[in-house]
Image (cartoon, rainbow, N blue to C red; front, top):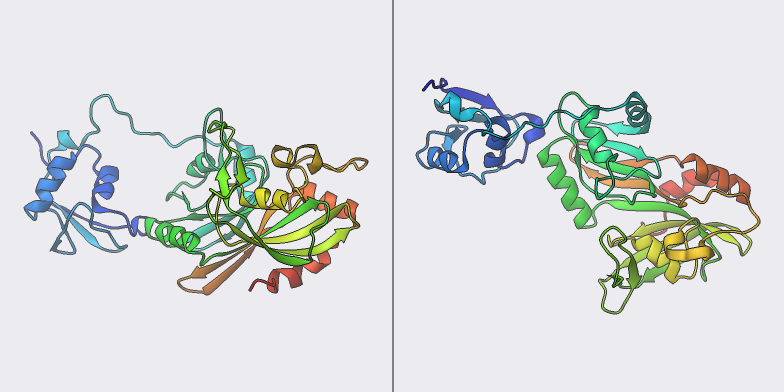
Amino acid sequence: MSKTAVTQETVAREFDGQRLDRWFKQHRPGLSFGRLSKLLRTGQIRVDSKRAKPDTRLSAGQIIRIPPLDIEALAAPAGSTTAARPSLSEADRSLLDDALIYEDDDLVALNKPPGLAVQGGSGTSRHLDGMVAAWRKQGRLRLVHRLDKDTSGLILLAKSVGAANRLTQAFKTGQIEKTYWAIVVGRPPFLSGEIKAPIAKMPGGGTGAEKMMVSDQGQFALTHYQVVDRAGHRAAWLALSPRTGRTHQLRVHCLHMETPILGDGKYGGQQAFLDGLDLSRKLHLHARQLVVPHPELGELRLTADLPPHMVTTFETLGFSLGQARDLDEDAPWR
């Protein structure tokens, strides 16, 4: 049986932070875990000339020593297929190009349009995760957080495993400051404040019809809000900052305040629409800004423009986007 020669491979930046066994699964797909473990135990595979374990975390630039391996054994197992890079229509490629807000060596920031799912699911074949897999010829972009399908705005993707781990942890621990803009039906009781109401999954709904509600048995949830402008008693423009990350938190909390988000028929029913005005029936919730800790810049402030349907509604209700700059730089919860 033919064997390869001893080789040394440098860990690319996009695999920074990845486990060694997962690196081998991608780069030597025919090498079984049992065989890999034996090669590691006997010191034949080394990282920077040192012994390693399957769960060793790699760093970009490290050198992996790979001993002679059976060429036949390195082929993908019989019956398996290597996933081909998915195709991307010119329209979707243009959509992603236009959505790009920021890019550096660690991350990509996109302004997601409303109506585009972030990940696939039952009956969902077109989604952001699949589209970005075909968008770039080199490197994989990794989702580090989520937005509802009908919510527009900022979404981050990491360029490496290490960056994905850092950003995911930053979201979980509240190090990333999130600001959403919403138009709500009605008028909040105060110009600013906090909504502290636990959220639980509503019983009786399937996974595809997941719906949440305020419940004493739910998880703690906290949202800060500020009224930016009002259209009499009919509607208000809110800046919202979720301090926790519960499913549908902003939609549930706005409903709890008796001011459902405009267009949110799922939670507000008919109360989420304004009669007598020719307004879009799309959800009026937009991830406006993220303030992200950055290894080189210290702090990265990213801002996403409103989608067309919200711009039109702002104009119809007489809300002035001239207030946006001051609001972006000086939110009251900072």
